[in-house]
Image (cartoon, rainbow, N blue to C red):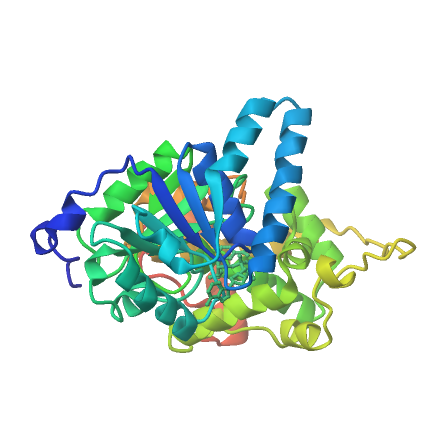
Length: 396
Ligand SMILES: NC(=O)c1ccc[n+]([C@@H]2O[C@H](COP(=O)([O-])OP(=O)(O)OC[C@H]3O[C@@H](n4cnc5c(N)ncnc54)[C@H](O)[C@@H]3O)[C@@H](O)[C@H]2O)c1
């Protein structure tokens, strides 16, 4: 694999210091305003721009409420709340970003639109400014390759809600200057986050490894082996997951989760392991999108009847073994491909999606031989590539 570019190729970026003071954020939606709050809390001056100025106004009004709640709960003083709020400067023009040390883009997930914004930005900021994207699924290398100065470009991927979720994936692309990832890693530590460094692969760490949590659960439900309620209950009780896959998809938004799955599937050149589910597609088409539409796999109407839950120990064990074995296999494959080091692979799943344990440690606990056997049985039953084992699994 090609090495990232060397330090000497862009002296300006090599001089970049993690103690940056001016941060520009493009996009003031869910992620942008959350990242703005994180940066402002750490004392940065934040410039916030959105093509839709009304969105910035709305997000700032909501942020004020969030900060008031923190004061009420005595998590921060009213002085600190005011200080954080005043650090965020709403901007109506991208040209207000000219003195920024770092820009984080959090706009719509569309490569052409993002590229256009970066090309405009490059004309405004100094050559010392680091440009980054919070994209969940677009290749960092592909975004950087459209820039005049791709060495300064990097992925900085926060999780939702950004002020609460500790994980940040730092993703250098093939064209990113060699030392920039470490520098951004230190910066994220200074911002109180838990950073990990990930390779520029579809889904990075978390959105790749977590795919079977949803995909295998959907399969089990599609095949009428168990109901969503039973699958959720099995994963909560046997795996100690805070939420089961269906509850979580309802929270994330079934359309959003489906879109990530489709992107990962396409970007891995249609690897059958990541094949999306028809059930999820139909739910999206019906606009049963989860909590946000009042109905998803569960009904959120006030008077909705709770579906009966038939507990079944043997079935629960089968469900849990199947999903956890698929997840462990993904983590082992990520280890084999060095998508991140072991420590970061373990941290990412715990700090980005609240898994109760790292998957490699879990594999040890269950026994890799047992995991391998479960996958072998699934492979023999279905005769599908989906259940192929990582070549490393048998050596673990
Ligand atoms: N929502 C999540 O859970 C999540 C988590 C991690 C990463 N992300 C990524 O973060 C990015 C933003 O996601 P979000 O959920 O905050 O979206 P969002 O829809 O809440 O906000 C996006 C904002 O970008 C603005 N925008 C669109 N085009 C623009 C342009 N050309 N210039 C300036 N502003 C523009 C929109 O007006 C909107 O306010 C996406 O790349 C997404 O993949 C999202």
